[in-house]
Length: 101
Image 1 (cartoon, rainbow, N blue to C red):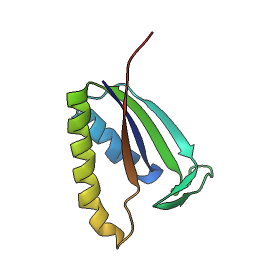
Image 2 (image 1 turned 60 degrees about the vertical axis):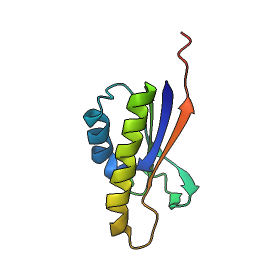
Image 3 (image 1 turned 135 degrees about the vertical axis):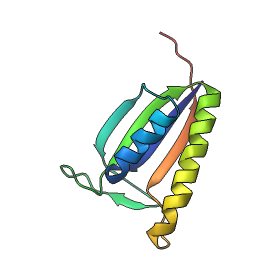
């Protein structure tokens, strides 16, 4: 099993939900208005700011996780072309995951 940590701008939350649904990932934890700073620049923490981040934690079997990662990769590549040289604000990390309770 893998724990996917998905970090993205709030402005693309509908696209992220669609990708999760497309890959039958229906259980996840979602945190809105997450502040931070990385390669895409600062994510401002302000009420419903389009510059704020969202974070999703989703546990999935490895095969599902890898298919979903491929979907996120394609999505980022397709939409990254519109960013005019800037890094598209979507990052996915895969961590080992074991349910213990």
